[in-house]
Image (cartoon, rainbow, N blue to C red):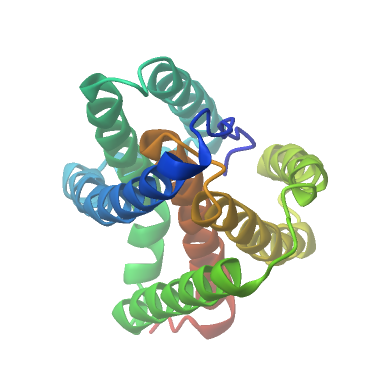
Length: 234
């Protein structure tokens, strides 16, 4: 989970070209978001086949440090290069890295007798959330960008709670964090999607990064809950 939020820029274009820019950004964002799932899957596969997921499971503290340094470093680099092709390459590298980090949870869930079903259920649930938020983003007329500040505070709290629970190992806190993360990042998904739909974002790399983080966090926390409540270990 990450509390980093790319800054979505306002359109500098006039009303005449704003519609063209909006449609282009929206189309490119959806395409790049779809493509970004490929390195995510590849990264998860590499993580499990190489045994990296087991190393992360044996050292959760070190894994958290690697995750934070790697994720924030790559996101910073993406934002610095978002106006060039290097930004796209860095984004795909970032999604590969996130896939590797996801392999720990995937390895745990797939170790259950119904693990494959749980992963597919989490994927389907995330797709439903995304479809719902995309529909709402296109229909809600009220500007929801003001929610971002409050949601960001929630993400910071979740991040601190997640890091603390590495040492506390409190099941109740883990459940609370997962449930709240799904709610917060679903809301963030709505805000980010609406900003793209309304033309408030003029860079599809930044837009894709923001929405990818929303989707990733909804999926991982939904998978965590399914593993806890629906997992079978025979």
